[in-house]
Image (cartoon, rainbow, N blue to C red; front, side):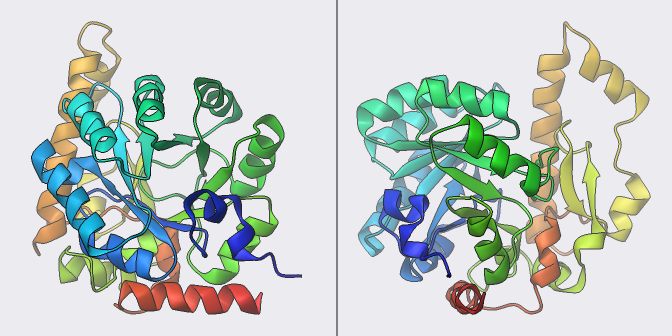
Length: 323
């Protein structure tokens, strides 16, 4: 019997009828994508870092609320590399977004503030130890980032990670990574997941504002063309193995590794590496040059053309029902 997508914990928590989060993607996610996700019965989130100022973040939250009634979230980087974290958190709580997704740091302050504001908090996790910690802090759900996720992937397969987290934790487990169509969404649900967070398959949507070159790369390349690089943020991050990536390599040089390990300066070097990497991605995402570093995960294997986001989700629904 096919699990009813409306009965999944993610659907129940947010009042949606298809348990999918259009994942927050740096530089890619935008207002148009969120609106179309909500129209399609799913939900979505945008990284706060996609906006230069907190007032721009506040404006887009209000615009989405005015345009469509439906749940959406904001993704916050909660470690020291995000110098605007406290202001971004304040805006999310004041504007009462439906949920916040925390990444790359302790969610304690976020959970404390969000609880007061009535905002749900979903936390990225890669193992049971951290998952139990965020549950104890009061997280509403955990996003289980497996080794097939785009961006900063985890170390485990979903077949290891989901059962482990379901056994160790009592809050909903949302699977992130390796899902590119409705068949795989259903597989995750049948494997115990309470919903899915999906990003890479939506990079090539018509609503995405990235360059046509970036979108076409998601069509032309596949799962075997995804590699890990530490050059962008110091933490392993998945990118498409373009000729430029092959030329510059994917590992930090000896001096960068030395700075990354030096106890006195590694905090500042990591922040510098992160900001430098984000600027590199930004340049590549919106312009067509030979210096292309495009973030994506293995699920681009399922991207065959550039289509409206609503059409992509509609096909996923049909595939889910086929089983």
